[in-house]
Amino acid sequence: MKNFSHTMPTKDLLDNSSFSCFSLAQDSKTLPNPKETPCQTFTLKDDEREIRADIFIAKMLQISRSQVEKLFLKGQISLNGTKLNKLGTILKTHDTISIQEDISPQENLNKLENLEIPILYQDEDLLVLNKPAGLIVHRTNEQDSQYTLVHWLQQQNFPLSNLGDSYRAGIVHRLDKGTSGAIVIAKTNFAHENLKLQLQTRQMGRYYLCVIDKSLKESQIIDSPLLRHSKNRLKYIVTHKANPHAKAAKTAFFKISSARNEKFNYELIGAKLFTGRTHQIRAHLSSLNRHILGDFFYGYRDSTPNDSKDTLQERILLHSHLLYLQHPRNGEILHIYAPLFKEMQDFLNLHFDLKSYQDSCANLLFPLDNLYQSAFP
Image 1 (tube, rainbow, N blue to C red):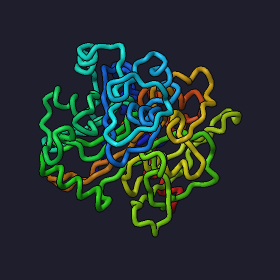
Image 2: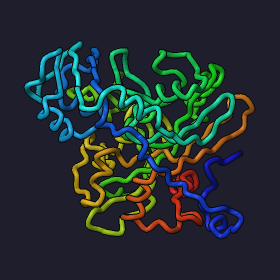
Image 3: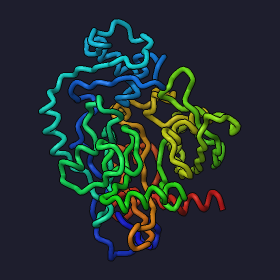
């Protein structure tokens, strides 16, 4: 078994002088601001009808509804070619929403070309990246004009599998736009088919870090299927297992640390996915009346101190920290760690006492597989 990007922060490793000092907290300043995008167009599909315009836009752009309101007040939102006159307008199937913003497409393309995404591991079959928050993984349909991780991969001339749609080239699994962390890319069709099978059989999996707005009563496993919300077709809710339209979903949540300031009641937790449903972590936490900081779409209400508000306007505090898989060609077990980006590491250092998880250079690394096993022996 091999660990990549870098070893786990045990006390023995911290005391081992043979490790050189370097920064693992990765800077996402080169990422195009999600609010600085060209005209984007979205057409509603059959299962997205009867949803409010502001909720739909917030979901598609992964921004808060207050940010949507700012776009509306600037007159930058159109419905079927006409300026939108009410954010509460109920959208219908095949309606087209366009968001015109200030930056030109060429300016945005230049920013994308200059984007540096950390590579955590690669060989002839695989590529594992540390995706920054604010970058969508792939388009949802042909009309979607957002710049994506797939665009970046193509511009970097990586070979990519082509088993699916052209706008999903190489994509084995996805991360939400506001989520950062480890994501695996298939360079070959052989690797893609193998990794898809590993996802189905759970040989491949992920552990996440997140900060929630209210402490869990205890570490727990949520085994509740998910279903699209009847009124907001972009949101998912838990339902009973007998529901024929639901999809099985299982997540383990385990406590790591409570905020040093009890006023905020924040808690840093880990999450292990047993299934990979859309919004699974976010929906399961919402069912517990817990919300990830910055996740306005699933009910987070901003109680953040002023020194951290900017961070939560650009992302949710959810990071795919550890990815494990069996190499498709040689069968080797890989554990790949994705360092925290600077804005999330700064937030954690500001609000939590986490010295026991620091390496010799004060970078935060969490042995999430060990913490999970301790919580659920």
